[in-house]
Image (tube, rainbow, N blue to C red; front, side, top):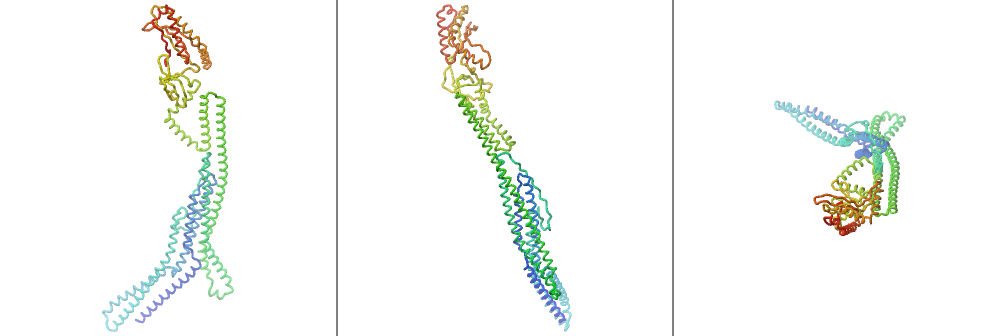
Length: 630
């Protein structure tokens, strides 16, 4: 029994040694296979990062322009970039699988399940031995003599075998842990690929097989060509920026193609090696028939390796073709934008020249207006008014030319101008009314410098008329004696529109006023004599300047196209509480009013003192006063 147990132990040790030797042999074979080609994990991830960055730039920065063809080019860029990313991930997963198989072969068995099976068998054997050991421990106390010695010997043998099995189990567990540790690189690469795929879920799904081509929404050209100079400048700037973005995409795509070629070259070299090896085996087959029968070429292994490499190489080659097609599309897009930008630049220069010509024409008209004003308008005041009007008109035309040339969004401009105008109208209401009243003031029947006017209870001579204000030299006095007070009264031109503040002025072309002589009469006196004598005296004085008054009256008739009666002295009787009164009204020239009043008063005094009948009919001395106040 002891000898049989020893032989069982030796067989177990032999099987374990043979298994470990096989594991080592497979490990060496895997190392040889891996030495033929092993994908570079860092290169794969670097290529995926590069193409993902290029995809993000292509979809985010490639914006459509104003031409319909720009939307087509952008759609092509997005579609090709998405397709290139899909092919890159497909190739990366194939290379990850190839790298995982190589790492699995190098781990010792090519399949970690072998270690699990050996570990399970040894554990089961330990459990069986432990069961037998328990049975022997129960039998030994009840036995004696030789039988007891045999049982003790079996128990010692089982204990030794269990110790050896435990040592073998510990070695297998360490080997299994080492294999699992070596397979981490495969799991890490696939996990990194899945993490990168999650950054572009709209193109590639994590841990998906060959992905189908997803539709990328087409972009529509929403930019409309602007007719304004500012709009054209903005369009030209956008075109220059678009060409810069396209150049950046071209440079990035060149770098992505370079990284793809770096990954593709080792794959192509490995496939060439497999194909040449297959051709060599095929050519040597007939010549070495005996050897071929003993060691036939492993075409199955070569075919498997070829398929694995082709699965990684084909998507990579297709990706490079797609990237090159995308480059050609970007170059065509750049050429299209360049041609359009040249046309826009020429149109911009023409518009600038047109604006300059229009401004030159307005300036020429302004200069002609100025020259004509100085040549044909000799009155300094009217010349200043014409020049002021020229500034307003030409400024308006200058603003219109600039606005029409630079601004393109007239609807927005109209809205903005409406709000601004409303605000100005409310905030500067008085100022605007004064400016509007200025054109009434300087009109045909307006106010002239030197005119005597009465406004808001102030009488004065006009000394200046401005755009928003007029200036009066204030006059004051009693009766017919008006004299300057030394003050200047300033009124806004908008006073013309004030209903409670009337403005009085001389009729254009006239410079006279009405004065009157008042004489109190004695009841029962010869009133008719007083009237005739006093009226004759006034007419005698009036005859000295009658011709001037008639000329002024004719001028008024010609301007107003009406027939007016020439002014002349008039006598009227009035009855009051103090008794009857004789009033004689007569026109006087404004510049000679004091002189005329003095002569009228002196002539009446002389007539009364030389005629006793008049003296008896008059209750007091005559009084001279203004017939119309202020």
